[in-house]
Image (tube, rainbow, N blue to C red):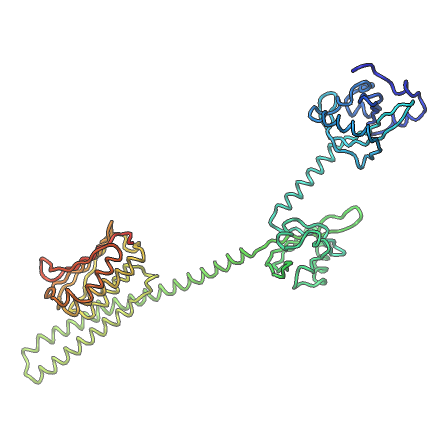
Length: 473
């Protein structure tokens, strides 16, 4: 440490040092070599150095190790151009007590000459608590700025904004400095100053209450943003000023989601109504098919059994009545089909195929039968949109040419999609086998990477086999 020197030994007791001794701030005096030549009791307490323990020490001992090199550079520059630096403009540094504890310090420097020598007097103040408070404040401000909600604090008397966060800048498109020249009235096209003063008055009278409003805010580009705003009065400042804190949240996405939910709910109600209608129509169609048509068909058979036993005049009337019954049955089948027609998007592929079979049954001697195996409704649209017209084409050919009493349709979905249509009719003719209908069916299969063949069935009649890969092209 070297020989300790007393400032009083150098300059004598001129009567001014007792005032420094009594200062609440720590005061040390350092010579040009960076050695402490004086410390008051407050400095001793501040640096945990009782009974003038600081005197004679290098001033670098009072700094953390990582700051000592930089401090030497500061000290050298200060010695070249010494000037008073007030505490308010002081340097915020870290200092170290002799017991090794670090603390934040604010230091004011002043050059002095005593006894013909130049010294530097440093006033040192522990600002650790203030730094912690400021750090907490900065974290709060940073947290507010990170929020997507706009925070706008305005004076209860002038209504002028006193603080806005970055969320307000992002939401409204104004610079923070521009917003600080405004009031809430500038940003709300539908609320007057009188409305705001009434709101502020209510909040000041009820400081524990918060108010929520859904409104519009006007951006700098003239666009309106739907927001949900919350207002609350802040505490009274030392000068008696009152503030109101307002939070504004952009609810554009929420309103869109709510509208979508409402549309979905409306669609669900409509779908339920449609389903109820479809179920009712299906019930009517089943009743017509299972009851009315069967009774008419039975009545026709009964009349046919009487034809051979009657004279020609009655026979003609019976045959006309039987023809009328057949026509009525065909009309009923057409009505049943119209009742069963549904939106293909709603009912799926299985029911679309059932409808095709029901439609074709009106032109045949008996209703075709259809069976399914595998995940029919999961087939991709590319296959479904070819499968339905293929089945319709096949059944139309049978109705026109086959004179079949039994028609069976099967659809099997596995690694491949296999549609088979078998009838017990008169068999394949050259016109049917080579007609445009088969060509269309074959072309549809080829577009999907498959095949279509038509050939006599071993049990009589005709078999159409239409096969495509499950995935299509």
